[in-house]
Length: 327
Image (cartoon, rainbow, N blue to C red; front, side, top):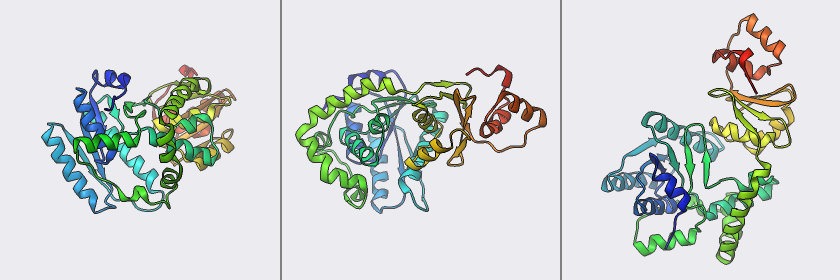
């Protein structure tokens, strides 16, 4: 018997919900569990066209949605070049954001579970990371355009598989998830799965404690205008930049985090999309990167006020009154 997080379920019963669906083990189980819990939701699925099986997954998802009288949103894309996972995530979230803005959804439901959380923790530990990076995903997170909930975050993969098998519920298995040439799969096969099999309760409890303690390391973030943010310039500033960039649609890689830290005083642009600049050694300003022609008066005001060069294009294009800005 799987008991979804009461906090998440209570919140989801009071909003318009969209489930990020892949028809894999986790999202398939969550579909039925949410339905049994009385949560209303629709689903969205992305086909990246890299596996022949993906067509069957989409067809089955459409049949499932029809059977349960739910809306389904689909997207078919082909990604080129390297860094597939990062590109796929970016495309996926842009797709979700478009649906939310057009259809008025409030909550995005993700099927991450305890194994995902431990695997992420171990991956970050292997790279060298701070607490906030190692913790990664939380049960509830707020974004600019949605609230994210992960009702399965305390449930192990083994429990989810047992639930599906007991109920004889259909799901698909992505064979790439067992290829150990990928670091996450290697960590899963060699460490995480067996560790959870022996210490599941302790791991779940530890994450609860860490989540409560992370407030000490939380960056101080202020929203100045629609897409302009300020982060207090202190030892947690980089974590704040990382979080705001994610809110604005860019997930920073470790290399980008290091580059941002190195260039922070002079400012930088992340992925050609997010502008970051230091204001008076007090605040880090973050906004979408805009390259535009500015008039001389505006440039002079920016210079006098000490506005970071990378941010000025956004300030000008957004028509923001520089004198009225408060950080």
